[in-house]
Length: 417
Image 1 (spheres, rainbow, N blue to C red):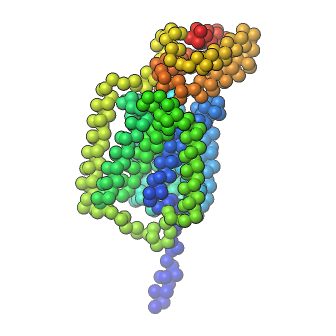
Image 2 (image 1 turned 90 degrees about the horizontal axis):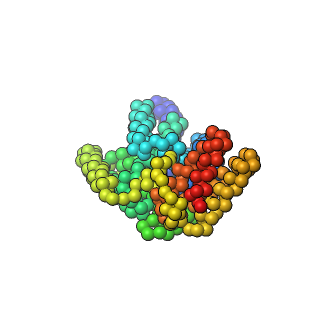
């Protein structure tokens, strides 16, 4: 009897899980967060006017701050957890954008690198903890592995989603269908007995391109096959409000909290060990089918990313006359750009570098603000002018060479007429 009493008093307390129960609420708010990650990252990058790299640095600091808050909690708290997911979604998107837009890394390479990085994170996590289940996030090391994996999944999902658009030329609305179909197949395999941990992480990755394409579809201008024209700011505010409302609901109801003995030796609801590998086979076949679809779509005539100005200087070797470059752009926007460029030319003639720098910043902000409207109207012309912009920014901010500055401004004046 004494032994039994000692055993009971020595029983360790139940550690509390740091992530929510995976319910329909989890997936709803996850998609909302990924949509915000795409639209809010685009809007912040344009509005801050400090460049993509500095924007990424700012959000890395913010991510570190909210992650400290999340780690400091003793149990899952909706506000801390979902704020961290929102911030990591923006940060992961920015990391991929830097590789693509600033460093010129092809999207297939970014996708491959992030996929390998995620495999390494999972490998080390499994070797140390012998579990990848989010129902077991009850220690600091496991939580660290979890958030590292989440960060990489956002970067991977961004790269894979953008690569899909580059290969296919699909509009954001159409491109939603592929990840949505794959998620449906994964859910079906899970319900039929597939491994729940594998199904969770595959679906988690795919919600990133799903949410990003949904955000692009809502924010893109109202032109045929493009979007609804809400803009990045309105789209971000709508989804942030939806996230806030959902978090408030979860905080009040606690419907997504896993506590006590519910989280110890948890038995998955639909898991059937003898069906694990057959369901893996079904998911592998779905991946092969998706690859076939992408290969077929890439072979069809379409406007690829290079033609639409994706990446650094994609149209550097393209030459368009002023008439060709401006034919499809609204006259009011062209006049605005022309006025700013003429102001830069006047500042350069006076040797007023400070005013020239201010003009360049104003021009970059105006150009970025109008990207969502102009690029769909004429991707080739947009890419041509954007390559001239790159030459301007480099000459003013890096070379600081009056001769190069003059050449870049003259080229833009020739284009804008």
